[in-house]
Amino acid sequence: MKTFSSRLPQVGTTIFTVMSRLANEHGAINLSQGFPDFSPPALLLERVTHHMQAGANQYPPMAGVLPLREAIAEKVAALYGANYDVETEITVTAGATQAIFTAITACVRPGDEVIVFAPVYDSYLPAIELQGGTAKVINLAPPGFRPNWAEVAATINTRTRLIILNTPHNPTGTVWTADDMRELSRLVCNTDIVLLGDEVYEHIIFNGPHASLARTAELRERSFVVSSFGKTFHITGWKIAYCLAPAALTAEFRKVHQFNVFTVHHPSQLALADFMRAEPGFAAGLAAFYQAKRDFFRAQLAGSRFELLPSDGTYFQLARYERINRMPDTEFARWLTIEKGVAVIPVSAFMPDGTDHGLIRFCFAKNETTLAAAGEKLRAV
Ligand code: PMP
Ligand code: GLN
Image (cartoon, rainbow, N blue to C red; front, side):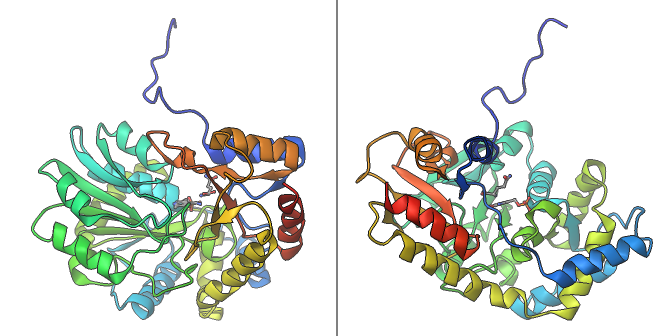
């Protein structure tokens, strides 16, 4: 073969892999890729081992095991007053990334337009491009990163097929409000536009309540709503998430899902179902748990030359570094990792047009000892 013509010629290796690798190479404290450095609940680990030993080692049902779908349905009903049918409206996926890819694949045809908000999570655009869709990027401006609804209205046209939103928002920590959702509702109500809500940080919110797309019937009827157990139970490496959608949308979602992964790790699903039954309050405690970490980390950086932006949700903290130097953010992130021993994510990695706001992202889903050690290094920068 002489040449292999790429379908994603502009795409390199994801920034999370690049920065974690650099952190490991240089022995830096890794506050770049978002993952906890503490253990999941012991009961969850005990249950997954139990189910493996008990024989749950063959294919589970394509949509996910029933007890887990039931536990999800109960949680969503209690939190958002939304009744999703366990048979036809809930699908367990191999992480939110797969759910998002699957929803986009099920929905977007060549020539369709998809509205996204930048900073934008890095998996969305390649997924849209692979389906032949065109991303219409709406830039959110610092420091507030609020959506401008007039701009959204002006971007919608007859080719608009899908709008993807992410709240609480990675990397900015911005949280959409009930008013935002009303605006969105007003804009899409007389259209066939589909919505995809990336709500993986639904429980990590410091000025809630979380404005889920699942909350109102008008939005729910046209929405794929995605959450991830990785964020909620400190198990990013298990890659298990779920997608809620009305039956007609779920049917299309599953047409893709069944040929994409078919189904998801069996014993882990049963373990998650057991854990959600045993400790139904765990998710509700997450906001206070992470708010304490956020506040601890912010206190560590008091007196440093970093300027902290607000963080209303997620386990991320943005910071401006112009008082330290004026390097491009990608160079600054490398420099901080290699020379100063703390790895971070440059926010321009989330900007399709490469806009550099001079901002970096820290992940504070870490033990206090890790955050304190990072704080010491960062105060010296
Ligand atoms: N969306 C956002 C906004 C995320 O931050 C992440 C992961 N950090 C994902 C999707 C992917 O989640 P998962 O690991 O479950 O695929
Ligand atoms: N979503 C995580 C982050 O924002 C990383 C996930 C990944 O590495 N693919 O850091």
